[in-house]
Image (cartoon, rainbow, N blue to C red; front, side, top):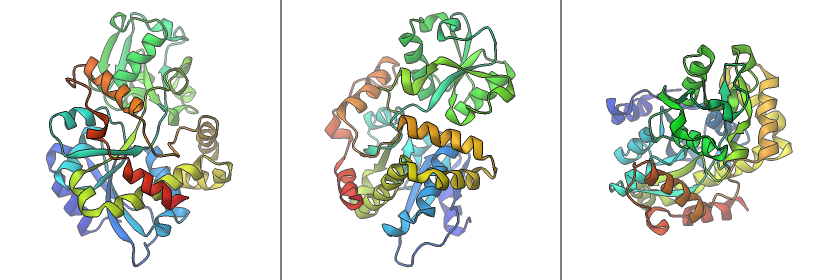
Length: 337
């Protein structure tokens, strides 16, 4: 339900943030719950985690009332935090964050979220069956230097394909990439595990050696981060929010979550496709992509930074202790127990 406060947040974002939506997925918060303004990038995956946390009572357990704002990409998460429209980005790719930090954005990385890349290389051409077949082809990506671009380059290198041998085309988000693959306006591109089971229905297929969670697990997909002002003003709310989502990561990663995950996905998507929901749930059980321990390592953060430097979106690797505050995640873990 969108109320006056939600509208004010959208107004505060301004036209520079593009399309944004504020939402709450059912259920009234407990009377003493602390509101936490959260921003995340658009996509069903994050909303399913949110709905599982709500349905299992994790927000009530930690006495928070999350007000979620969805925006189209990570740069808009940064803008929402800097503008004060949101306090916490609970999960987003963070390769756009460290360049903003280098430019002086008052933000800190707080925790891990989705550690493994949840994307695979898809193609709509039967003659493209391996990553090696992509030489000379047109690949869909996001903006140059974006997460999709970086992961595509890493995957190509891993498979011995010179990135200079392909043509990159900016088509937008990973959902847009899949649409372009299905329409054959690009030869291949990375898209989310969400389309795994329905790819064949659009005349597309995943390349068996193009599964990024297996091929480039060193690339940390998403993290949680917040504004310095939110940390100073409401550290307790951020700790409790991370505890609620951290508990959701642990629950979703356990076999006990099967039916709850299916229900959450059906509610978020409005579709009763239990088979697709179970396929995603099985992928989570097999690969454990969520950061149940919450603490990001310096190696994880520096790996992303080094790629940003290579792609010339950042000048130098910033000191880990300067751009992170893992004490909030540590305190959240104490609440989860």
